[in-house]
Length: 620
Image (tube, rainbow, N blue to C red; front, side, top):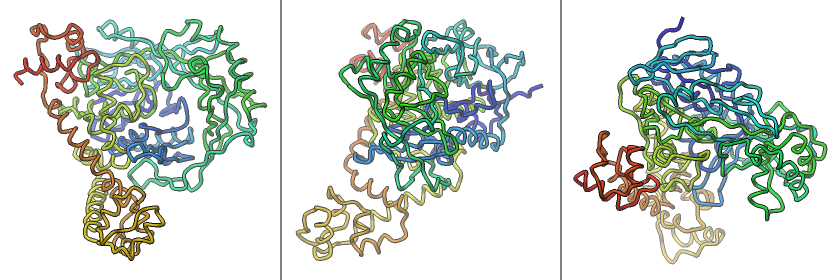
């Protein structure tokens, strides 16, 4: 009934979709197996993409030839660039999306991708032969063979949904859980554990009084996520902000004795940085109010997502508390918030390619690895799809370093440190965030994706044009000299001191209050000299010139770090013969089996002295 595939991808969430697209676009014959064809790429939680550090990841996915950025731009209903008051390393794009259009666009793109087949069924077990994954067995009993398998099961592995004292099996509300895979993998020697996540109530926007809330409009300029010329919306929808109060908190507390979290019915650890509302009022008891974001679910629906009100309290408590929130006095609830508990596999059991150490040709991506968030899942799916293709075709694995991308930071964190709570990306996790900006993701990664065969010639030409344009602007600003007479009026308007003498335009740009855009608008000679350059190229040149000192410092640190990254540790290295290693380092090295001395140095519990000892034994 089924041909043999190169890759089978299990699960069609954000990780599964990116995995299928990447492997297929590289030339593999892919089967995407999902329990429900109607929920491909569903936004299970909030209808938004990007945000702090997450926006950088989406732009990196796009530069690597993934689809998330394109889908986000097509389906967005609002765009904002966050952190513009800070330096460019912190600027983070975020979009509010039309939930149904997002999923429909993803499915349409996958259906238009040659080499992707679909099948609706549950995968109940893997076909393992001689330590290799070579197919799956479905709930209907079909054996489907492949050269590699990518598991992206999300929250479905033995998922249990909790609402107050009620609990029932499910991977999402109204969708059944997946069984069989965890039990088989544990039998094969894998370690598994439980995590939890939550979601807020969905409500009827017609029952809200927006006059009691603060309006939050989108940016005038929509930058978007994709480096392609994807069409952006002409209009945007507003979001709204309101707040909880001591009265809201008091009502919520009445349900704590029936909360599955506080009653001990949930074993799994929840996300520290996206806590439930009951968690917030418990942990931050001194705060009298918490911010709630009232987010539309799309262009043509009245459904509203209440961001900041994740909860698994009894329904009547949720509704009574919501009705004390300004603007929510007459709220009607479409469905209550709930918590979901599910199996995951600590990611220290993976290689950097996201292939498991125990079973060859088996790859994990997304929440099965302990992460939370669409963006974190999507980038793992992309890399798992690429590497499953590479393995199936007997090619070298593609691994991004921490200095290459946020994607590299995320995967290295998971592999080296593991996680005991849902892992979420932050800019603070990236030690090289000055060079890992959202604006230069194409400059960093397009050449690699072009060499692999993911990025088109058109994309590559665009990147070459951007690089050349930036260098030309730098050369022009080095050549043009500004006289005090022509520049002092402009400088005064921008709260900058007058020129003591003739000065190069490049030096003027280095002043704190001066931007290249302001110079173009305020200095006719600069405007004339830079006619014809796009806004994107002008912004990139501005950032590179103004932050050059910091960028060069970081590049120097990268060079030093790469000295350790280039020192490979043999796969069969015998740690037992190094008596001088600390007991913890010995245990961690044997369990994680670091690829390089750099990775060894980042394992929690490993001291610099342990790394020095390892270097000595490796003859360094």
